[in-house]
Length: 79
Picture 1 (cartoon, rainbow, N blue to C red):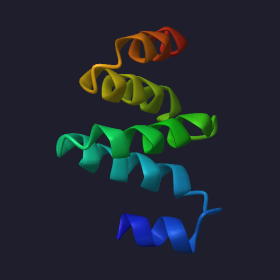
Picture 2 (picture 1 turned 90 degrees about the vertical axis):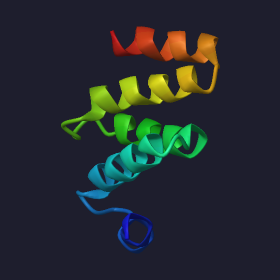
Picture 3 (picture 1 turned 45 degrees about the vertical axis):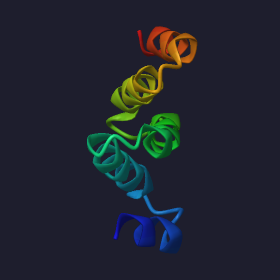
């Protein structure tokens, strides 16, 4: 349902929330490669209340994928 909403309403004020929630589900299922760009997209929305945390979760995805340099850069951006 998250994907359907995102396709149908890409400009919705809830779009970042939907991306974040979908990414959390994917992360829980260890699908880090799919979750990461969704976290990144949510983090780009500075109006989204979880934007900073989304950036951290994107870094977590990179770390889980053993992309340590990218993870470190993302963690630095979070701090």
